[in-house]
Length: 325
Ligand code: GLU
Image (cartoon, rainbow, N blue to C red; front, side, top):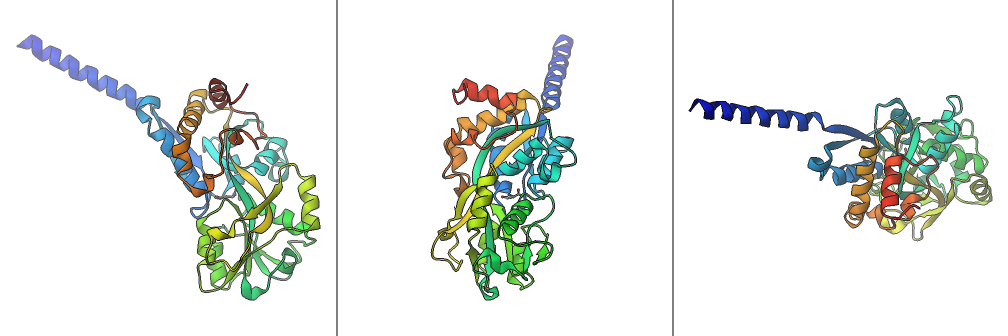
C-alpha cells in the first residue's frame, strides 16, 4: 500500500517535471508586419500559422504584431524587440548598405534574409473629383506619402522627385499610416495617397468602395523610367485593377514595385529560423492558399530579391532540399 503511494507520488512528480520542462522550452517569437489593411499583417499570420501547427515538435509559438511597416520592422529586429519582420526588398537593401533612414547609423550588419514573399507595387489612388490623371497632377494637392517607419514613404518621395516634384514644397504632404488614408480620402481630407503593397489589399478595397469615386493613377513616365534604371531595387510593375471592382479604371495601371521579404537578426537561433522556413516551404501549396497575393509565388522565386546575407537556419533548409547549392 505504502509502496504504491510512494510510486504514485514519484510518477506524479515525474510527470510534473516533464510538463515543466516542456513549458520552459517554448520559444516565443514575434513577427513585425504592417497595418491591418495591408498584406504584411495577414502574411505574418500565415507564416505564424504554419509553424504553430507543429508547436509540439518545435516548441515555438509565433505571434504577429501590427506595426508602422518596413523601416520600423528593420529597427525592431535589430534592437531585439522583434525576432522577425516583413520588409520591402528596397528597404532591406538600404538597411544592409546603410542608406536612406540608415544613412547615419550605417550598415545594419546583423540583418539577415530568410526568404522573399509577394510582389508589392507603389500604388497611387486619387479621388476622381481632384482631377489627378498623372503623377505631375499631384502639384498643389493634399497627398498622403506614408508615415515615418513605413516602407512606402521613401517610394513616394522617389516617385515624386523623379516626376519633378518637391514633396516639401510642391504639394501638401501628409504622413499618416496607410490604414488611415482610405478614410481620409473618402472624407475629402486628402486628394490622393500612395501605398506600396501587394494586391488585393484591404486598404485599396476600402478606398475604392466608398461614395467618393476613386481611381488608380499611373506612376510612370521618362523620369520614373530613368529612376528605375538607376536604382537596383526597383522594377516595373502594375496595379491589377480587376481586383478592385469599385475603382474607376478599365485597364491595369503602370507603376514600379519591390518585393516583400522576410528578415531576422543574426542573433536569432538557427533552429528557430530553420523551423519557420521549413514549415512554409514544406507546406508550400497550403501556404499559397492563405492570400490571393501569393498566387504568383514559386519556391525558387522566394530566394530572389534578398540583399542581406541569408540566415544560416534558412540556408540549412534550402541546401537540404536542393534550392541552394
Ligand atoms: N510595404 C509597406 C511597408 O513596408 C507595408 C505593406 C503591407 O503592410 O502590406 O511599410
